[in-house]
Amino acid sequence: MKAIIIIAGSEFVQGRKQDKNGLFIAKNLFERGVDVQGIIISPDSHYELLNYIKFALDRADLVFISGGLGPTTDDNTRMAVSEAIGVPLIYNEEWLNKLKTYYKSNNVEITEERKSMAKIPYGSAIIENPVGRAVGFIKVLDDIKKAVVALPGVPSEMEPMFYKALEMLNINEKKRYTKLFRVFGIKELDLNYLLNDMKDLSYNFSPKGIDVFLYDTTLESFKEKEKKIKDRLGTFIYAEDNLEMEEVVGKLLRENKKTVATAESSTGGLIVSRLVNVPGSSGYVLGGIVSYVNEVKINLLKVNEEDIKNFGAVSEPVAKQMVEGVRNLINSDLAVSDTGIAGPTGESPNKPLGLHYIGFTDGKETKVYKEIYQGSRNDVRLYISQFALNLIRLYLISNS
Image 1 (cartoon, rainbow, N blue to C red):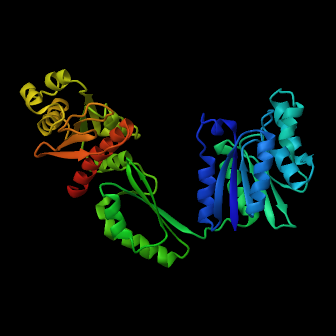
Image 2 (image 1 turned 180 degrees about the vertical axis):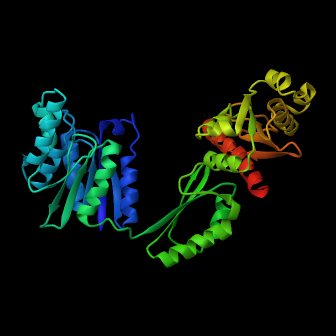
Image 3 (image 1 turned 60 degrees about the vertical axis):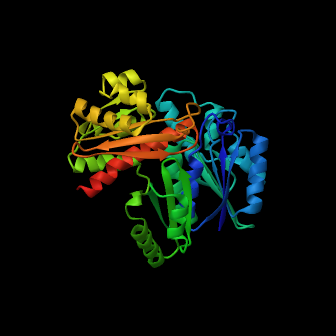
């Protein structure tokens, strides 16, 4: 069974907002054995929507549309579907009565525009909206064995209605087993070497590492591949499913009753910011120092001024003194530091763009790691923050 997803909204086409509904629908359809042929982002224009719906019906068995079911003039999904399949729009009396009751109880006039939210193409089944006012619908085209599903664009409305639509279409049972492994600290070629004998894998690369996506249609084969991935990648796997590194590190810090502090230069506070994004982080994050200029490194973190002159601010000795200085200043169990060149300027013959030194200490031993990561300024900073958080994770795993 093939599906095409249409996301209606000029705000997405114009880049003013990022769509997430298409990803949600695609993931859930994929898990149920439906082959998603594509996600189309359409402006609110009736003409464009109409053409995209016709295009999708020519190529897929299922067409899912999200958005364009509200009461305003740019909500054109109902009319576009009606025109594409050649049936008139009619009021669903049951939903219309609910709208009348709702607006009357709130002392709001039910205008023709508001009443339009109860309109559906003739012969459609409604999908009740448990949160909002706009009704969804499914129109099954028996003659060509296809179906159009229209859902609101608001995620809190769309998601429960989507699951209801799956039940109504009898495709609610999962037919694919899936798992996400989040990996950091291994190069792409090395990962490929370790997993190149395995099919049904896909990869996503980012400054935060590599997401390895496993899927299979049989449980036995899925479990076998899952075990192989875990055995081969070991501690390179920092999370399963959608956990972020800071969530994993936060859990380990809580479990091990450890506190942490940061001394950041290039990352500008990103490491500690990510840590405190996790609820409950006040139990293990004591603080952080953004020592962006040398004076702060010298005066606050007690970095030796002569070492900065001799080795430069981006150097191993400076990273070492930064991490030890912040731990002593804040009195934490653990600490991390970074100093580097995020770019796009600042390189020298001996210090390329992306060069960083990342320090880690537990008070007994201090280690400094040299890393070179090239990319945009923000990508470099994100990678270095991930590297630093991963140092904390690996330490806590090995010292639990």
